[in-house]
Length: 147
Length: 141
Image 1 (tube, rainbow over the protein chains, first blue to last red):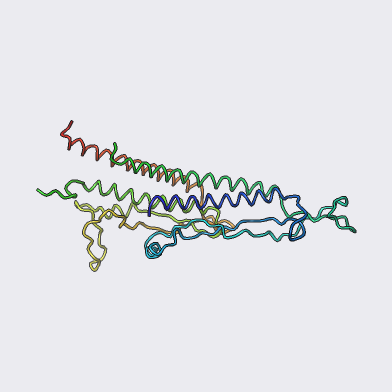
Image 2 (image 1 turned 135 degrees about the vertical axis):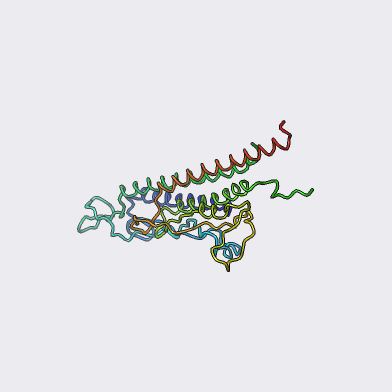
């Protein structure tokens, strides 16, 4: 158990939040994309976080019987939202259905993405605070005996 | 005359030092909770060590672990190396989110600030004691 553990945990969360932020950016940027490589409109992406034991080394596994099971965050994967595409009537659109005039638009709600973005932002800030707190404690410890 | 470290450092120094170790563990537990505030199914952990530390200090001169059973090994004075085991537990939570996550970010942030402050306070106390020792070594100069 050292300062490095705390710093590692915080930085894992910062990295994970950054991935989430990128995914949200991708969703917002593609809110109107009707063509993708797989065909059809863009599908909303979402990250899945999973808690993982810190520092999976032999030494750590041995100590795990006693040591707190602290978890860092890992991005388990990026999954596609399987919601049906939004159907919008727009006969002038090049991708509109010839008979009905409906266009399949991405299943993205801009509001939802904005809310997720703010949540992610706050989580990032919280983890930065935690990281700074740990860093500050470490530098306090360095000054033991200098009083 | 041979001087041992026990004669130089008082019990209080050991308590302060162990307290720093424990605060660090607590810091890492809180950090783990904050990091996993968005992880589905993560259960917030709590860490308490004050009781254990108090019990380990006892009321005699030496830092020792109180044996609650006669068959327990008698621990001869706690060495300050993180031997003290605080109580790590899954926090009881009345509010569980849709994703099964029980982290209350606000209270974790408050705990973080509080733990950090107490860590600094402990270092400050340790510094004062070391300062007094230095004062003595220098003959009051």
